[in-house]
Amino acid sequence: MELAAQGSRGDREVLIVDDDPLIVEVLEEVLREEGFRARGMTDPVAALDRLRHCAPSERPDLILLDCVMPSLSGGEFLDALRASEIETPVVLLTALSDPSFCVPPGAAHVINKPFNLEELVEEVNASARPSRP
Image (cartoon, rainbow, N blue to C red; front, side, top):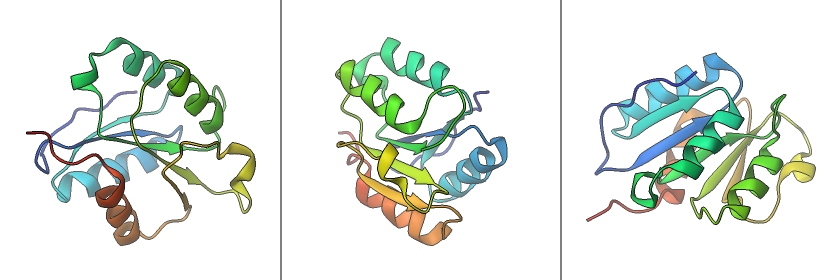
């Protein structure tokens, strides 16, 4: 499922990849209220395919990535992203008490679910690439 993007903070875009549609919907709404362009996808395989086939200038400035998903874990997603030489910053989201199995090198940060929305927005601001000229 891919939802439409709208709004902007500069022109920074956040891609949310989580198999829970409710989490995707909430994060999209919160980030849009904060002025980001937010796009959510519940299928990590489709999200990875989209990232591999878009021009570097069309890639998001940050990926919020669920750690545990049925078809592709956050760690597997990150490995595939790096193998494709896609250098987008990533923040992992997890409900696991010990997410070490799915936190490979290259993850910007890990945020535990349930998360504080204000802290999540602060992390997005800190981790996303700066606005493009």
